[in-house]
Length: 271
Image (tube, rainbow, N blue to C red; front, side, top):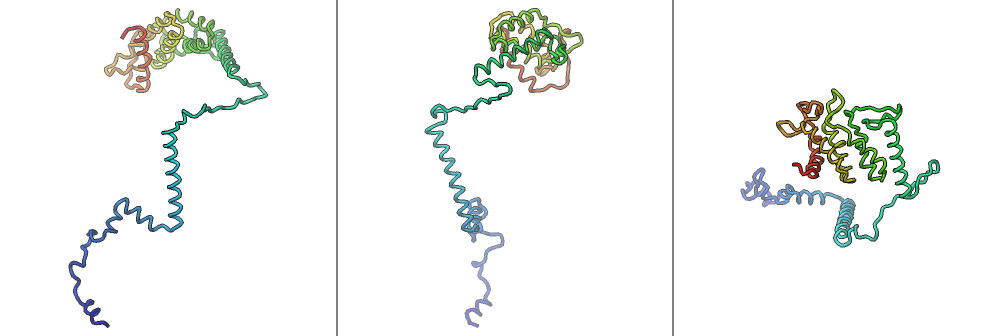
């Protein structure tokens, strides 16, 4: 054996040549692996050539698509393209002769509304709901005629003015301070159906009588707000003029009624 090798084998290791356990300052490669960049670099070098090539192609394709999308938005937004249109070809049904033109389609929808109104007017006029199978009616919402009020703005939009006037003539005679005996009015439902329906019909027709009825509905439902929190109770006894006390309230219902009451306040000038 070589004398130098033999000497080195028996000589003690110098302190400078040792690295304390857990100290990685002397091993920068190991230290680097603990950073994100170092871990990615280590993983990259462990991949074979095909995997590197595949990864590079995917990154280039995705990067190119992203850059192209940004450039399009910056220099040629879709809104500026020449007549951008998305059209759906009309479906031709030989069995029922589906309408092909917008005008014919509008007329078909209008005729359907006239048919629905005719049935309601004949069998349930002034009542809350029509029962189409038995041709009878019910007053499950307190007898205010919510179907009629719901339909007023639709009748006006469709230029069914005769039917609209029929509905208005009935509504102006309804006393909204009364309901079916023993019935407690759901606050949320009557706000979005009766109050909103009357406000919309007024804004379309400018018939001041409809605004007066809307104010009456808003007033009879106001006891719902007699709470310590300001959040309305879910039901009101309009016959007694008091709210039906409850321990819980649906926040969505309490929040959505703000729109109708704000509009009523704006139109009447009554805060």
